Image (tube, rainbow, N blue to C red; front, side, top):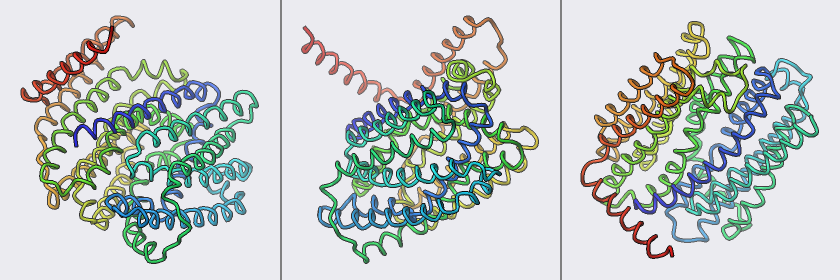
Length: 484
């Protein structure tokens, strides 16, 4: 199981890294072409699109994964997938038609101006194409076709970005060019994704299977809305309590912090289908605990690096008007980490306790709203980042405690806490040092090496070190025999 996880995680991670590199390539362009207020408009429209995408199809994509991943009969798999695909296409199409016909009203509601109705129209069209794309692409993940999943994901990023560059930089049509890029990328790669899963498509709309899937997924809708509020309430509250300028600054900070989710996302994407396939096996909890240690080592190394080199990253990827966001990025990176390790608490999902999941997410969403309301007036966008961190930790903690009741896994939380403490101490120490540029970079590299070594020493025991050495020796010998 570990080897399969490593293989699929590596494929997903390489794809995520390539995608993030291509995406980050646009960030310096955006921050030099668009002022923070323009970036704030882009961010708000993306938030609205994500919220609507969460609710329109009643999270049926989650049900497709749960009901097909352990089925042996390909015809039955195809019936589930085809029924869900027809449902997604119909619901998205009807909603977008209604939204486009009312784009002026929606523009006033979302952007406080009915003069941006054309941008809103194209944003909803991009939602339609991306909704279809994400649903079909998701099936590749549930089928563990990691290579094809990575191909369509990278193709989507590349096409969207090339179209955006042409429209924004060459044609100079402004913010609307970004949403045209998303629409064209989503539509093109929907077709590519469908080509890869066409063996599972049949002209069937099975009402019984639709009801079965919706009974599973519908309770997840309030849960997903709560997750949405949890993730995006900071920007919604910033819009209400501050300005589009601060939304733009915070959005750029979150974009950079999201490097964390892109890098660790490979493990998350590979792990869930594996758990559904193997959770009944006796050794699976032990394997998950072992995988968790390696995951934590990798994730904490990223957290440490991004916390130490935040200012340098901003100088590389943004303009001076965005540099002040440096103070919020470390908080956001850690909050993304806690939000992402839910996959290591699979008990509620395995036992299909979706109502419990909904209650947890709704409760933590309400908490996050309260924290943002209290902290933004005191610390501004930094307060929003702190609120998000507190909420993500509490959500993770409750999920983990309840998951253990249904599917116990023995994790070493003491070691994990020690490692987090090391990161906090190094981060605080670095904040009190202000030397010359090159001296600062050299010192940060030393701190990075010391922190990573300490984390590795705490997490990896002697037996694991012996296994790692043996694997490295095997790889070295293999390379030695292959190379001339």
